[in-house]
Length: 35
Image (cartoon, rainbow, N blue to C red; front, side):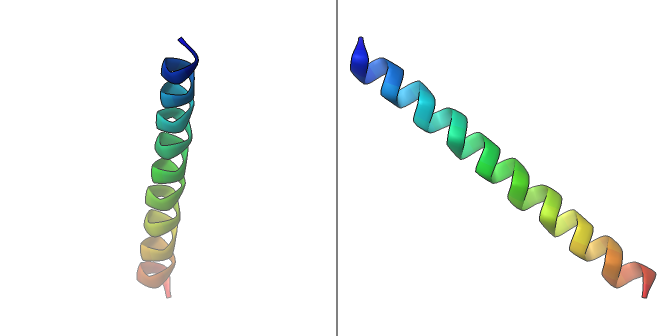
């Protein structure tokens, strides 16, 4: 049970990290297009 909890938490953080990276990349691309 504890292991499953740990796994879901890891997946949760991985998803957040992935989303942050995607948003950051989109913002950088947008800035490059605007300049």
